[in-house]
Length: 332
Image (cartoon, rainbow, N blue to C red):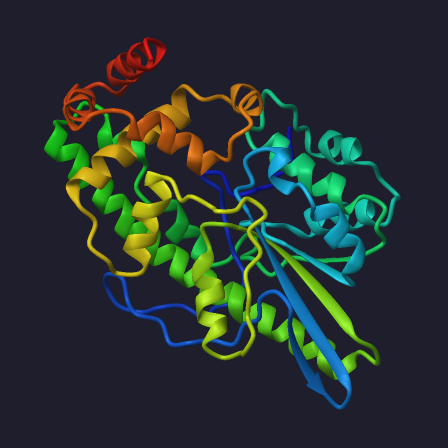
């Protein structure tokens, strides 16, 4: 049986866990600023500066990690995003970084193949980047068994929310999903911020030399940067894919997190995009298209008229709606 391992993927759920630092109450709450650093920010205490660079990536294919190898080689510590991580996962990452295991050994240990693990290609991008760099690997994300795990499991399942429903019910179901996802992600990001802050303070306290920390983080988590910038000067982001385009699903999720209005028309396009990425655009097909995911989804979905979008989501059964979308895109 494959051992548990999770890398965030828009079409697959995972477990989570770690320390606390969370919002309370109902709905989406505003969050007090936390300490955080991004790229090229240095803190200097007693002559021991610590810098942190955040490498924002779509983490869909290995190509999304272009340039990461060079940055990992320059860093002292590499921080990896992994919701629901276990100690065995961290150990295997470290063995790859130390050169004791090859990336293929990592996949073999966890029983992953391109066919049974959708983020396979993205994970390969990370493993290739850290292989034999001899860098310390750290995970500050929520680990397996944490109390947030149940909250993550309670995020509505989109198939159940949308299948067999009217257009209006689909929009309402997706909106409900956005609210619950936003509540969870805010708590998760607070935890990441808090743990990252502790890591930095520990390095400042215990290191006798300059330390460079590199964090690999999904582009969706821009709020981490925003919250950290409130507490530190000269904070910058590094998006290798520039300009980075947030697709309709990401934009609707981000608007929920930042408490901005989410129109029915945006949700309708997000639903159709979800059809596209979950049921039509396989990883192998994605690799054949040299365009970042956000831009690709905009090209494919934005080209559809409002009438076509309404027609697709007005079909109750998801399967039939996907077939309709596939036929329309095939004619383009």
